[in-house]
Length: 326
Image (cartoon, rainbow, N blue to C red; front, side, top):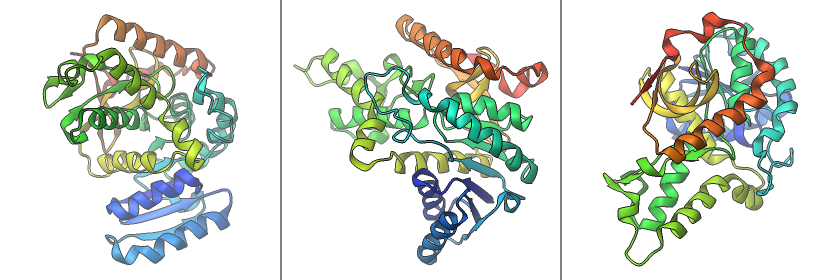
């Protein structure tokens, strides 16, 4: 029950805070290029730890990751620093890729050398192509990206707010890229089994309702950054939830990024998450328009990730990565 967090910036600190308050692990190690920052975050967390579930918190180097079951990787250039906050720029988070590739090429071999059995959770933007790179550098399939789990929760929250219900009563899914090409599956969205179109209050335009939700979900990160410089707490909670699924071998199905042999890359679909990281992938039924948008999203990721093509066909054909169409 040992977790590592790489990067002690806004997102890394939020991940660490969530691990501590949720009682997700018994030991937490923070690693940052700036050791003083990692030490400061670890110290700050230790002061609040006595009122949380028991956890040992410390800063460290890569060597201190030995024995970790999950490593959350948050280091790299963020959206504000990389200029990825323009609603009119379809590139979105992908603008950060070239810079963060360099960061990952340096980090991943050091992480794997210290924790060769750990599941690697890619949190840094853009997480999906960086997860593909991580697989290649790590030489194994125990790699996940946070994918569209946070986007799916945002979808549920904005639907619930407009419908005046609890988000726990809403079923809604976002698939594809964690980015501007992501696809909101309106055809599958429900309020306790009732299609969203049937749940919209009488007299309200469903088209206007849908456009408002799409806008709020797709650009939620930018809205948060405009007010608080970083989108951190939601992703911190989501990353911890994924880590919990691995630590407890829950085999829960979550919309996370996992390598998909059908598409030849990492993208988000409902995926079994357990102690080995990604398991079986499920592909939900989609409307014709949603299917077309999903294929476009895959094409966007394929274009930017082509430079990281994996030559290891055996890895691509891993039985744990097979896709089932429902």
